[in-house]
Length: 160
Ligand code: ZN
Image (cartoon, rainbow, N blue to C red):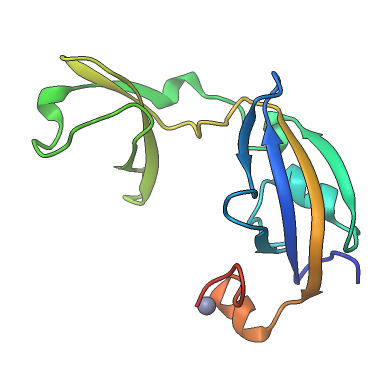
């Protein structure tokens, strides 16, 4: 079976940055399971997987535009510590929920902390980065109706 829209894909992956440093890998958590064709993984990787079959073993380099997007400098802001909730103990790398234009929660990452203020960045930490994936496809199957309506994979490596 080939990977196509509405197939459940199970894959091992290693993600490295431009300097070859490993950013993320399935080694610890086990294979990643997702439903093809629903934007559950970055667009460039979803495209590279389309049409592949079980056992496919390949590497792909994904530009920021097809990964986590380009960086937008205007999405960073400095916030005085006095404006933060008193129980918040900010640390670099921490993810906070900000409020977007429509009142929707948007993720913000703490990128700098000093005694007076913190820097928040609305860019994904991997925005602006070329992503190098080494992929091994472990499984391909048809999605179930239930999985499709929940928007996630069930069973081993999935929910429930
Ligand atoms: Zn479910």
